[in-house]
Amino acid sequence: MKLQKHPSRKSKKGEDYFKYEVILPKDAVEKAGFRDGDELEAEAKKGEIKLRRK
Image (cartoon, rainbow, N blue to C red; front, side, top):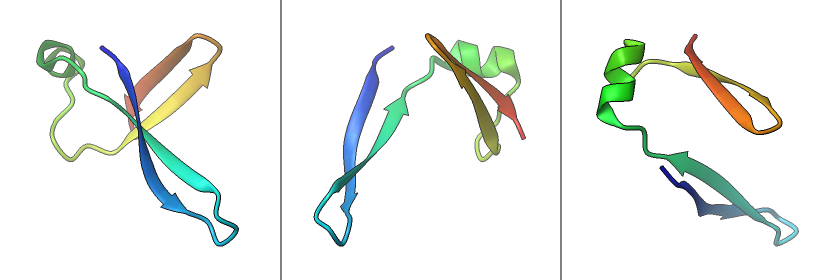
């Protein structure tokens, strides 16, 4: 997997905003029991991000 950074928009002051994407493997999504459209929340600490269904 690779973290991808995409430009999102510019602020009124001309600063760039970005969004980040990670493409998850299908088997990992199925194993976690996630479905298309699920709302997820992220818990982050140095070196890891955990996702869980809201």
